[in-house]
Length: 325
Image 1: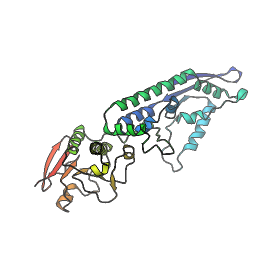
Image 2: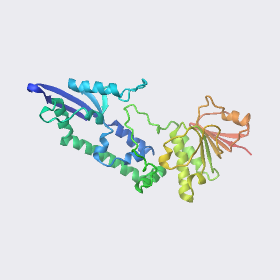
Image 3: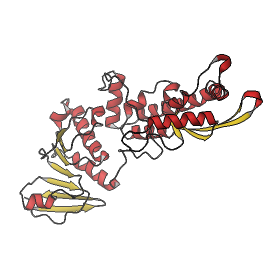
Image 4: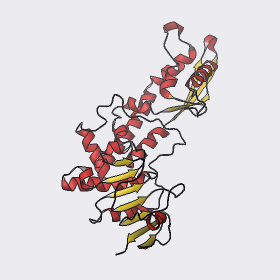
């Protein structure tokens, strides 16, 4: 949304005040929630004003006093260790931008009056209403679909049983335009389809994954765990143990999945899912042929060649090794 104002200064002087409202952070949130990521955060938006904390302001042509305030605020917000600035160039979160302006009765500065009048206008409220309507639509769409993890999480939050309900602060992430979500698939569609089929095999009663590189792989594992837990009435870890060689991933807390994380070594699994690229790690072939670390099945996105004692099946972007005999 482009806001193009003409402000009147002292002695009738006129000056432009042009900014743009950027809504990409809300779009990112909705897309993440559709991937079972940040669902609680999406449903925490309960009123039009909640959408505004996600809005970025891009400065296009602003009065000099406003530019000075922005420059000062940007310097104050800079990372003290020299890392990337939290704000893109010429951008600022709306809630910070709003703090630049105040009413001072007859002494209100022209640029303050100009912006505050716009912020309190019907037009601005209608924009917030439109954003909120899109969020409500996204929430309703999620409630109507059949994703196992999303359905479970929504049921928990509506019952006030969600693990985030007792956190002091709501989860919140205002993303930049170049945001790259961890939920983005990095394997082929055929890989994911094959993995889903494998994990539904009743002969597979446990999973071991070396690495947590791919969100969607972890998600598929947790979907099957939740499906079996729902069917059996058992706790997730009791019905379908999952072990991951990882320092831990925080997103599974929202799903109430139960995963055992290992910093060294790895728990048993009827299927071993290889998520590493092989650099710095002992390959599956070496684990089996040299060290005798044999699992019933190995599933990987990369070709490890022939492995002694295992059959090899391959598809588009996936390889399955199954112990023979």
